Amino acid sequence: MTLSQAEFIHLTQENLSKAYVPYSHFPVSAVLVTADDEVYTGINIENASFGLSNCGERTAIFKAVSEGKRNFKHLYIAGNTAEPISPCGACRQVMAEFFAPEMPITLISESGETKETNLHELLPYSFSEKQM
Ligand code: THU
Image (cartoon, rainbow, N blue to C red; front, side):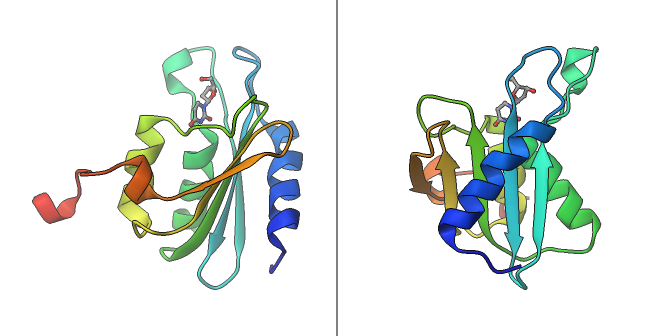
């Protein structure tokens, strides 16, 4: 699926409605685009045992990887936040497993304001298999 940047932003925001967030009421949506232009969506999925909740970003990444995808070209993340949403540390580490340091990551606020970033900025000097 090839969409414009504006369409991907809209899709990521629309997908917020699928979040399962009965405890935090804080929906997070992610849309991951593979190198071959497939699109995997993710939302956060909470649990009554709070620690088992899964973030939107990791849902999208795990869906794609479990379908055999390993090469990615763009990640969009949206929240109903005043500023473009900032992904948590656990998700940044999972991103580091699969994303090139310069791969574009678009962070989106409730109003649609965006911040363009990448893993090089979000997780400098990260732990990886290169150190093992
Ligand atoms: N959350 C995400 O889905 N992604 C992040 O990067 C930050 C936090 C979720 C986890 C929980 O369901 C809710 O947001 C509040 O922490």
